[in-house]
Image 1 (tube, helix red, strand yellow):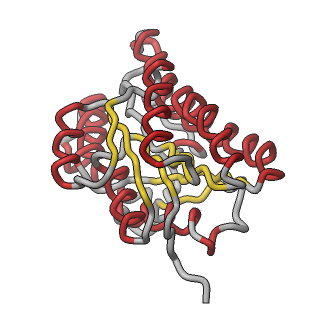
Image 2 (tube, rainbow, N blue to C red; image 1 turned 90 degrees about the vertical axis):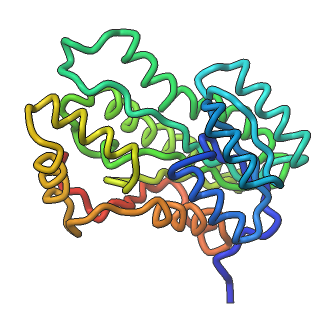
Length: 258
């Protein structure tokens, strides 16, 4: 019987030192993968290195081309190739009315959440082709299928990830490379707490009322966990997921609207 395993697979997880990225690393390590991570936060990366001594870790900003080039040189040196790219890095971007968003904040959100995936994919694809195939998993969001008031840069970037994913799936399928997007919803943790707090301030509501409004838009009426997102990544890169490509897979409890 085919198992949910990733034995021997060489995997790069961007923004892998905390949050969803760290949960992905833990799930793939438990499944037998060899991992390299990057993160832009030096303090978080230092903590990660202490907990995962055998995992390669590079400080890199995925929106910086030189950083990405250096990252992939280190991946090549440490892993000797690549079988899986998990494009997890992303930022929330500003929470504001469109006329209040600065062009700099807009650009930074697009550069990290969308351009960063392109910069990593363009370096990963030759390595995946050399390996005879592999998988790319791009992190989008429920905001990649639903309009999101006061979060226009984030939603625009995450919609872009869907188009990028579907296009790459068509381009890379003949090379035995699957490409899929995962669309998390409201994921437990400090990041969503910051998002809810910012949205509450924008609308003049309490944190508790804003959280209640968020959850009543989710069919399951609960947040999902980083581990649930990580399990979907593991499925897609395992032998069980080799027939899945070009898909946008929600791990969100069915967010109905934002």
